[in-house]
Amino acid sequence: GMLFDLDSRAPTRRFIYPLADGLQPTDAVRLRRGIGGVLILERKYLGRGYPLGQAMHIRVCHWTNAQISGADSDSAPRVLLELLPNVHRADNFEGIAALESEAGARIFLVSDDNFSSRQQTLLWELW
Image 1 (cartoon, rainbow, N blue to C red):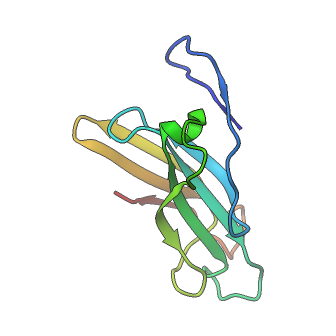
Image 2: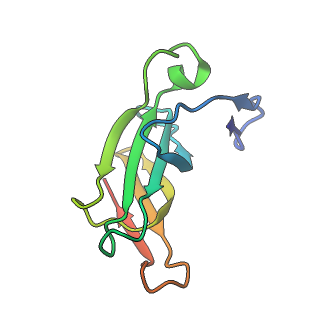
Image 3: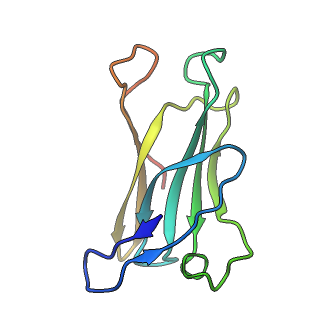
């Protein structure tokens, strides 16, 4: 992947994101305050054999600035949220956003229904 800093003239940085458990990164958001780093939305579709809303495995992971730069290449991204199939009702989340302020960050997940009766358009505020 690549990180672009649109607010400054900082150079673009390349990185390799470690994949785990068959999940694929689908979106990411950079955190500029507080803990910094990047939040990555990962997902895995398990197929139509699951009940409606329970065929997705969703994770939100935090990747630190040290991991991005390669200074800490030994540790895996920390899982902050995991929605498991057949345990949690999760939709086809494909976007993550952060609204940062002096008080902290509000994190959102978004999905759309893709014109399918099996999916929903949702906006979740996580924290």
